[in-house]
Image (cartoon, rainbow, N blue to C red; front, top):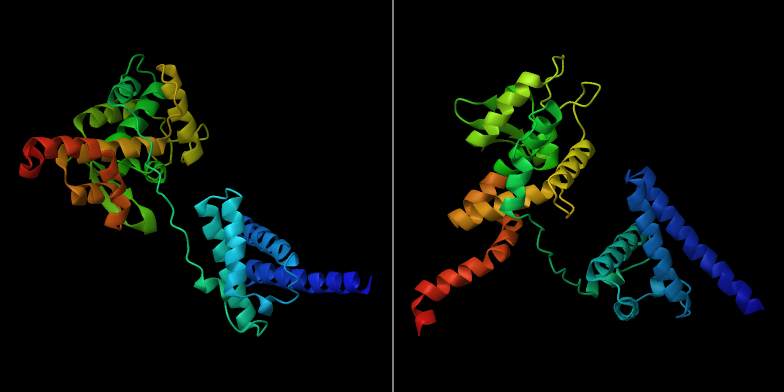
Length: 304
């Protein structure tokens, strides 16, 4: 009975240290509520594991103990992405404990972080895209939806970039639109003749109001990214496309088709506004079959 009371008291101390840590993240670091909750959830799971190892102090945990925890996660079919998050939570927590002299070392630093297999982005067939961009009725809502699709695809835009465009950001004589990308970094993206044609028709029917935004909601305010997502999805269903089409899929399609035509990764990087070439390299996997065909046809070693 005495041992049970002792263990309960020790667990309360360990839980209190977790509570103090998450309060530190929330108040001093100003982390988002979801982030703080994730840290707490991860650490409580780790604490539950430690309870089975008769560990009563965070300072008693060593690299082997953390490794056993990770192995248990693997055996439980936990994804590499989630394991990376658990390890990150433990490492940050121990850095906090060290700063507060509650531990002398970080046992999670010796554990190798598992790699994440990067999923290939989903794209859309050009024929389906053409159906979505084909004007029929020509009324305002159809023009708005088609213009969104034209710009997302022809300029390879993020949805946040699309909703940030103002009417005055276009230079139709030169065929460019100014886009504000990540980190408030502006770039000039070329727009095709088809997009310009739809843009002119849309501007003619766009409500006359004080807002500079290209796309407006019913209150004549700048449209949200969520509204764009709903409009794109609805447009796809209207033309008989059953898959879930979203704005980022159109950006992926633009990058993929651009790379297939140009085979110029640096140009695609500039086109997408990627800061690092690593972000663009994922599209080389999508183009692998095309590359294989060229290799088989022209490379001397392939002919042998």
